[in-house]
Image 1 (tube, rainbow, N blue to C red):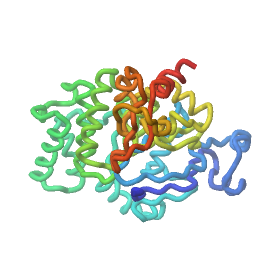
Image 2: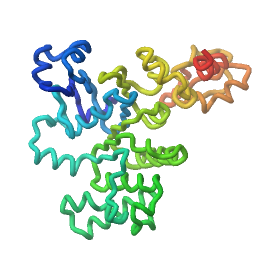
Image 3: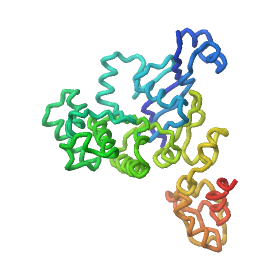
Image 4: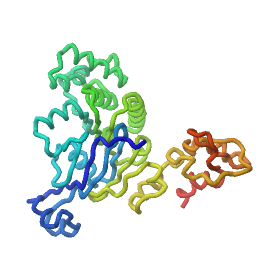
Length: 341
């Protein structure tokens, strides 16, 4: 069943320059790249439309300057779009009063950014409890909630530590705990792990997956790291020069990139961890031996298929019916073929 859209964005533009609204009007709401350049405007976000579905992890990525961070700032209205439409749970985000917008940010949205933004003069407990303090939550309640979040992110016992006494990864966990303290319905993260060294970054990605398994949040996550995106995302949107080039599942982006720009991102992607058996299977084979589920990633069954003499049957886990087969050639081509090319 199709998940319900929690956020809807339609034809979003964010243009920087002397009079961006007048500029867009002059060009009937769709200026060309040449018009932007000739008239001295920057189209940071250009005619972008997409939905964010309930409970999904949607990752927006692209090279530096592609517009991904500007887009997330538009959705949260930290920057107002120049044109377009945005809905949050059926409410027109662009028509909210300042008071209504502040209320949504405080109670419905959690935000984590690359710079952790911790208050240096407050300890871990006080940092995590801070947004609840802003909400006016009684002290006993906010302390209890903060302690729960600190335990959730694996920092139990460090409540009295100050940010300077924590590692980078621990500081990031505090930032995550603080953003979760308000129990947000939707969680925005802008390159939250990019300042961490590779080992801590991998650890935080695993922690993020663990938290999402427990909490089932709706998440919009910005990164420039394609492997990070494929590890975490339900869907990936890839931006270039302010436009959304492709938005799809990691598997479809790897197997069917929209253009050379997307293909360049995907060329070294770990197919064995992204591509499902269903995506590369062939027809049902009469001589198949053994079986694998159609939803399994090819890396999980590679040894079984590559070491066997016969094809392996592919079974639909929902119906338990044989829906195809997979053989050594198909799995070897999928894992090694494109990279070799």
